[in-house]
Amino acid sequence: MLLACAAFQPNAISAQTVSTPPSAVAAPVAPPQSVPPAGNEHATNLDAAKFHLDREYSPWSMFLGADVLVKAVMIGLALASLVTWTIFFAKTVQISRAQKRVRVALSDISEMRTLSEAQLAVGTGNAVLAAFLKAAFHEVRLSGNGAAEAGIKERAASRFAEISRAEARAMRQGMAILATIGATSPFVGLFGTVWGIMNSFIGISKAQTTNLAVVAPGIAEALMATAIGLVAAIPAVIIYNHFSRVIKSYLELVNRSSGEVGRLLSRDLDRTHESLFTRAAE
Image 1: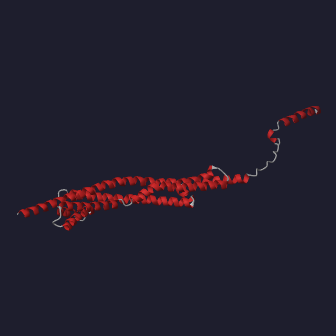
Image 2 (image 1 turned 90 degrees about the vertical axis):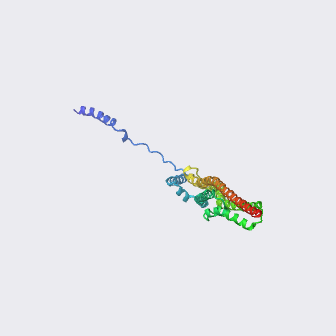
Image 3 (image 1 turned 45 degrees about the vertical axis):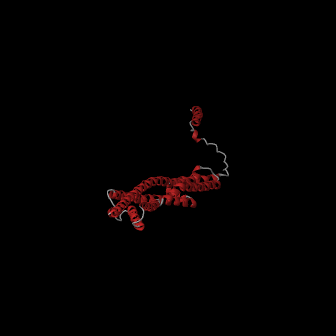
């Protein structure tokens, strides 16, 4: 019995040893690793990148984050765009009303036989045609009954040309502003972009990193100045070309009005000459 127990114990010990799980064995301890000296700088760059990634990149936030000079450029371009659209709406109303008045007046005097009838039909509601009629009457009165017809017509035509030039100047008011905005806005926006990119490169040198998440916001804010410059310039150029065509069409109506009044003046002079000739014959 004792011998059997003694023979059994080694086997039990060996079985217990074999059944021991591997996790129970102590793992070797790794030697301590040295921390790199640039760890603080790396953490700072990561924090800066995380800060820029967390920012909201809307146009308003980019405007608020831009440099003071870039902000001034953006505000100036926004005001220029506001001026452009103000001129557009104001001149659209002005030219459309003037064209309507001239067309109506031309249709009213197309069947008139004398200057007096035309003046009664037009009245004072149409500035251009009223000015032409007033100039014709004024020249006839100053010339007198003994003046030559050719001289009266020539002087009246000179007065008509002055009125037409004055009307053209009045209609072209604001066009120079549109031309200036359309020509200079892209360059003003480019100036703001160049200034902003310069500041971004200076920030790169100070941060000592080329991480795109750190430098991209400044570049995006700078590029927005060029975008606003194009937004201000493109409508200004289109509106300028549009008004150039519309004003040219309106001035053609003014010239037609001048010619119509000149024909009425010529008819009156012919009647006056005929009546004088009849009286002399009698």
